[in-house]
Image (tube, rainbow, N blue to C red; front, side, top):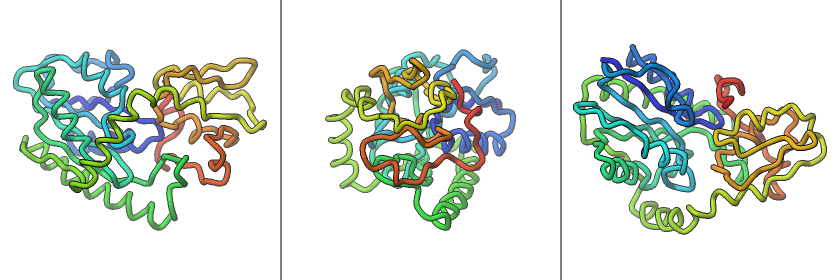
Length: 258
């Protein structure tokens, strides 16, 4: 089996997942979705994976854009992993529908839970709970690798009905507003002009002006900028200053640099 995994990761959960899965599958190339032309991933690829975070209970804008450029490969086995904090909702069903519009068939979709990185709603939780989630994620990745290696199909994980109804509605209502939500970012005065926020933004939505980050209305809400800031000087709204920052402990900022 020759595989390529396209991933989208802001704070490392999806990247770590892609790395672990690649190690289990063997002969697998990792390519970031915001740089899809990076790497070789030639005609001998027979397995293609998508690993990405759930954004506002659905498929992120960056992933939807990536899907539009995906090459159709006859006979290729496609799978996906939706990384989330416990509310996968209808994300993988939505992904399957989006892929079908482009003539692609999603054979398997897995839901893996990690500590939350959506800091406007709080921190990642107690360390003990985080460890349990990391352990459970490892077990889930092992199971997914076995399923994928055997080229099984039909598994498509989803949240309970109430999530699929309520959160899908909220996703549709807010999708077009997401890019403008960066107006809620602010600097609390301790910025060292290191530029890490600019380099981790997957969509080039941040630039430094007079040594301070400025957001340009094209936000993905991955929150990489606030989570990777070494001085924790980037805030979002009024509450994040009191919340613990989070990124996957086995991923470094340079790993997600644009």
